[in-house]
Length: 385
Ligand SMILES: *Cc1c(COP(=O)(O)O)cnc(C)c1O
Image (tube, rainbow, N blue to C red):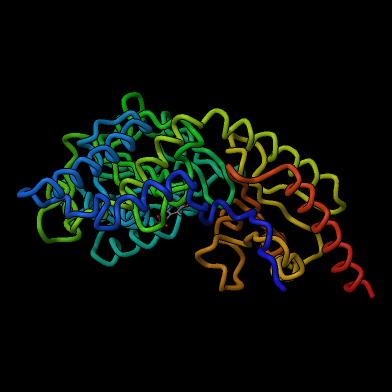
């Protein structure tokens, strides 16, 4: 009989909070709020529209925005595409240059590559060894024809946190818009759009205990973008398609819980994260990647001397963890994020990401450390034999 592995891969996706699943179920069936939120001619449609607007307010409340600045998308990937491609196309007359970093999520990097094929020009900033972008590097890269800067809030492999206030201020001083991929940041760090110089912000529900397949792009009032998906003119023409009421209600509640429980969630993650980090440090021949600088407590990227990360993950069948990011774990190339911060290839290949979440427990951390210790000694014995 097989049992499910101990889940330590919350940065790849989180389980849906049971409170969220229950609310979603009430937006699906005939007895529930299932109607098309765009149906204006009957009560069922109005109720669905009300559910969508409640979700919109819950999402905007978490980030200190106005509900009218929220555009629903299928996730952070689509939000990144819409922000980057939609903004550059809408402002092509003003300039063709944009700036990002070499350790962004593929949703950003591949959107930038698509823009380059359209004739736009990109500069990829190299991060510091702690995974953050230096303000001076951004200042040096800005040109008179730079129209957009896109940098992530929290790196999905390292947990490093960028100084959004400083970076956004520099972009604004040069007249460039600032886009932030905040998929890993919602519920972890303060994202107050009324105080931060951010023009567009990508969000995903499934990294914060909501369902997969729904996300949002915050678009500051007055920011012009071109739509990528055309149809009925939903979402003020920025993203057409019938709104997924159940997904939106789920994301709304997940974000409202994130707001309410942010402090207790973070205290819990801080405690567990510290225990895991210390436990790993106490094992022989280990290190933590991207140390120094600000980090979220729940993402820990560690390396294990003399072992292959893939072999270690195989030996750790009882643990759900990841090498590199989940999106490119089929490849044996070292993580571009780790090599991007200067980790040598062989050390990058010996690294694993552990990510914790709301439902992680102390006993799980201790069990993970025990499995890790066993796997390491058996792999190292085999090698030296
Ligand atoms: C997960 C993730 C995405 C993609 O989000 P989806 O909602 O799965 O499309 C984008 N950026 C970062 C940093 C992520 O962690």
